[in-house]
Amino acid sequence: MSDPSGHGGDRSTAQARDRWLGRILREGAVPELLEALAERLSPTDLQTLLLEVCRRRAATVTPARLLHAYERNRFTRPSALDAGELARLESLVHGRLSERAFTTVALSPLCPLGTVSAVATADQNKVVTTVRTTEVVADATNALALECAVRRRELLRSDPRSRRRVRLAAVHRVVRAQAFAVPGMAAHFALLGLCTAGRDEGSFTFETAALAEQIGVHLDILHSARALGYQITAVRVSVTDLTAGRHRRALREDVLDQLAQAYPSTAFAFDDDRTGGRGYYRDACFEIRATTPAGDDLNLGDGGLVTWSADLLGNAKERLLISGLGLERLCERFGPPACGDQTGIRPM
Image 1 (cartoon, rainbow, N blue to C red):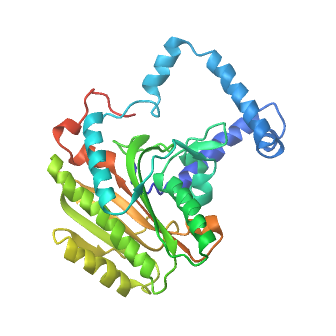
Image 2 (tube, rainbow, N blue to C red; image 1 turned 90 degrees about the horizontal axis):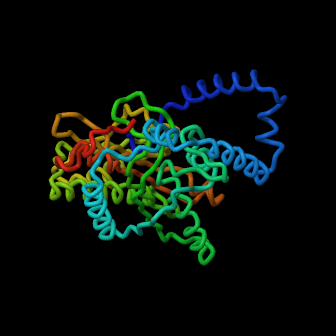
Image 3 (cartoon, helix red, strand yellow; image 1 turned 90 degrees about the vertical axis):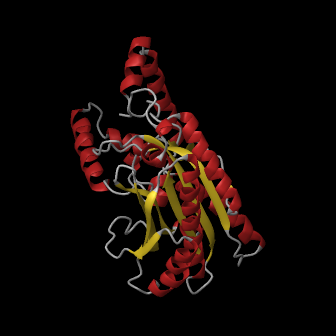
């Protein structure tokens, strides 16, 4: 499984893509093939063409080839975790969310084409793209951001200065297309996504309140999971000020200090050396780490402020905080023995 935010690897992905694409175009028999497909055909005509290509290729698949593909395709193999134990954890998560005023959403497996590249500005090769102008959800927060924008737009129609916050959450099995060299990384995994959308309230008020609230939700889940037999120790929360110190005092007083009082067994600190997420998040971001029973230090949660609501609604006053908690990693590395591999088959 990747970290919940899914950053990194854009440069290497682009280099590999350009290398493979160059070979295809050099060896292709149709001049300007890429331009014709990407620019000259309408989206509907391109979809019709690709659907026919897929239909013809599917017609050549035999049962033996199908089984061979299923066993070897990293996107199609089931999770190695026990589904019942994972469901217990997800049920606990929904219980904590209902106590914290977050509205849970059952997301579609698909979102519009370009959701990751247009909103989150990540490489399109990181997602599984379909031939029907959609893509498989690669991060629940991307899809939740779209729903937040729809709901905030309705509020703004009634009151152009509405400060009413929209709090959405989803437990979703996401799919990431990039290949990971690190052992244990899977192509699909369960993720909790949180989004809090609202309007700029001045003095960094919305930002610090949303940060403290979302971090608190994640910590409540980690604390409650111990009752299910999860061995979660040495939980640490780090916050990074991305404004060159302009909001450091507010982040310390309204986020770190308040959370430290509410969660005395958790360590809170600034992380000024963080490099991941810069350019993806704005103003501030955070990370949640914990120590496994085996003594490994792992990332469990990640989040930060983004410009997605402002971009989607064309309104610079809109604010959005996103975060994710890796439920699959939590179950696999911190859960009771029943969470472990039930089949002897690990994800490819």
